[in-house]
Image 1 (cartoon, rainbow, N blue to C red):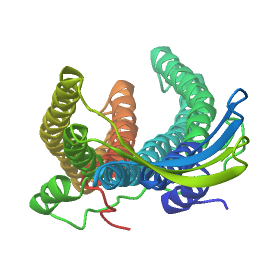
Image 2: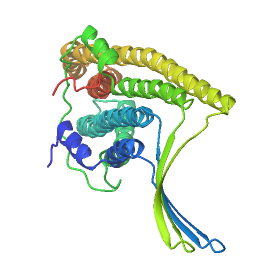
Image 3: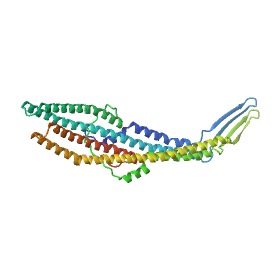
Image 4: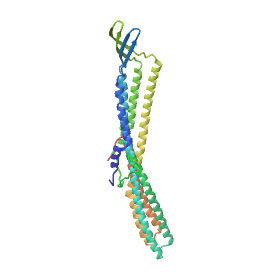
Length: 383
């Protein structure tokens, strides 16, 4: 509907985002790896015929991996599936961050256009007043030219923002999983989204609940099991089987049992497997440490940007915009009394417009940076 909120867009994206569907499919695929790795290998059926001896045999054999190999391989798959599951949450929060950024830019563009159009209407009225005063000789021609130049500048800004809104809307459509040219509803007003946790709680959540970091920890666990699995390769696997043999000369048949083991004699190859698994585990541990440091640093940066945008929004809303409006009113009175120049009046208009746009940008930045913090903290930080 018109006036759709950020929550409306997030709900739509969660239900329709291709990126999120892809992450879910990767996780679902990973959940089927464990049953395959825990399964016994396919049995082997053999048939032999000796014409000269008139002997036929049929055998069935099954390989039994050494104790623990299948469990370790399945455990690795479970950890990899758990990592893929956490990547689903990474994808969800990443989509949310993209939607929040695109939404804030789209609504900001719409709000900026409305503010500039309002300012343009005031300048056009002022231009008509100036024209009337010029015709009666009460205003110089230079002031009329300045009014026309200001009107032309604002008209150009209006056209620029009108062209920008569809581009921002295309990015928002792409973020929620729709074709870029799909019509969007009329946006509502920007409003700040506060944080419900303090700085210490957010940074603690980054260390403890960040889904990217949790995914890497599952990969570390899988790599650790890989070392144990590589060491089990030193132990032989067992083959057991049954064979039915029939001799044409004796016109009789019988059953026989068969037991065999593999001989893990290539010690260099086995040692290389252990070293490879150990190196992979070390790489995963190093990646976990690097990710923890980078994520906390990025979270601190996002927290600073959010707080800075919040501070600016309060400054513009509570101090600068009221003061600029008071200054504009005083300048209008002074100009009517001939105590201020037309340039002073135009600068007052520009100041009000600039502060209004800065306030909208600061609120939009709060939305963007809160979504970044949610990505790092691994959870929603407010409604």
